[in-house]
Amino acid sequence: MVLELRQQLKLAQKLVMTPQLRQAIKLLQLNRLELTDALQAELEQNPLLEEAAEEANQTTKSDTLANQEPEEGGEPAVTAKIPGEDAATLAEINWADYVNTFDSDLSFARETPPADAPSQFDFISSQPGLKAHMQWQLSDLDLNDRELDIAMFIIGNLDRHGFLQADIADICAYAGCSEEAALDILQRVQQLDPPGIAARDIRESLRLQLSRKGLEDSLAYRIVSDHLNLLETRNYALIARKTGATVKAVMKEIETISGLVPFPGNEFSNEQTNYIVPDVYVFKVDGEYVIQLNNDGLPQLKLSDDYLRLLREKKGLNPESLGYLRDKQRSAEWFIKSLQQRQRTIYKVMESILKFQKEFFEHGPSHLKPLILRDVAEDIGMHESTVSRVTSNKYAHTPQGIYELKYFFSTAVATINGDTVASESIRNRIRQLVQSENPAKPLSDNKISEILARENIQVARRTVAKYRDQLGILPVKFRRKK
Image 1 (cartoon, rainbow, N blue to C red):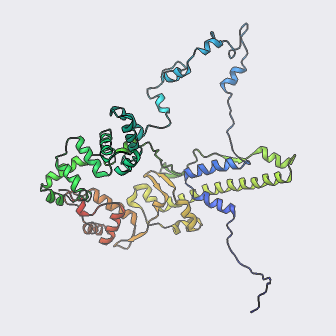
Image 2 (image 1 turned 120 degrees about the vertical axis):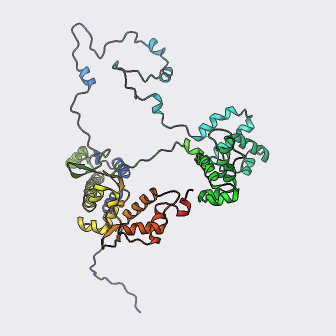
Image 3 (image 1 turned 30 degrees about the horizontal axis):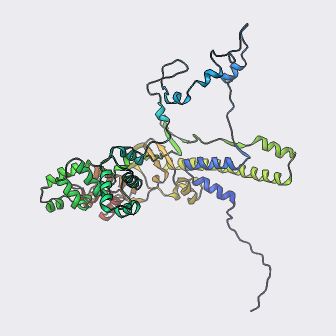
């Protein structure tokens, strides 16, 4: 075989993922909060892109005062000297005390502020967490320096739930103390607030809380110590047999245990809560549904007039600078175009969903119809992958509540009369049946299947069990309460 080099022409079609196309796809799949970050990042790195600021139509108060003519024989209002305004007087002011004596009732307009006016504590950037709360209490323990160091080590090894992540050997290795000394300091820390703190697992935390209530010799303490696994599965009958108590007595103790806090440190968590921001709103106005995209907080982008003028005049620009600005201009134009295309696509997808799921918007989840990505893709003339990207991690505010766009897509389940119903509607119906069941006689999977059959929904028992597991509902034997 002879190896040789030669040229050959070949005609083929393929999709080339240019950087601009990658950027458009990335923008399409970003949710509302991620899009805000992407816009700010693009504004920082592209000088040709800037935020379109609204022009002020009114003259500011300071400008009005500055241009005000002084009265005859007097001084201008802005430059009028305040009595006592000299260096000696200003030096006497203690600004630290002024800040510390912040008065929320102070009003320069001499008006009484509303009752819900913010106080100085509303401006604190972060709330004290669990460790700060524990350290604040250490002064009540009357510890020497060595014991205080051990206590600080214990507090420093608490997780966000309030559980101790270090064992006794770790404490001894850190402080060079005996196990008795480490256990003594640990027990003293466990006496602090909140009850159950510095426990090594949930079992110990619950026992500490029961001990704080003086219930060390109670049936509840025995249940937590010896039968916590049965308590987790709600096997109350077996707990009664193993403890020799009646089921009624066990249920009474379960009420006491239910009032305890399994994770004592969560109360002092200072983690920020991230709220869902809808990407699109659906309102009902005069019997018609109106779709509105959420553009709040999104900057209005435009090309920089100053840099565009430089490109037109080309004064003082070398070829390298001119090429850089033209490249950034094309990038900015494509970014704005991709952003506009993203908004139009979301609107079209939401409009199609509204057309297919109008019964849901009228009556709620029980009227959700079967819908797949292909249905919406064919309706708006786009590819399924595009619809999938648009509906991922995006939420719609509807008259029925806030739902992820993926929620409106559900597989079809055939009914007895030949129609179809969405699987999500069946899950919602199972949830309703379980919520309304008699706790003493909960519905089995077979019984739920029979009830659905009477409603013309043919669902097998194993399918009911699968939907029940997806909803996080326990089996019938664990839901029974005598």
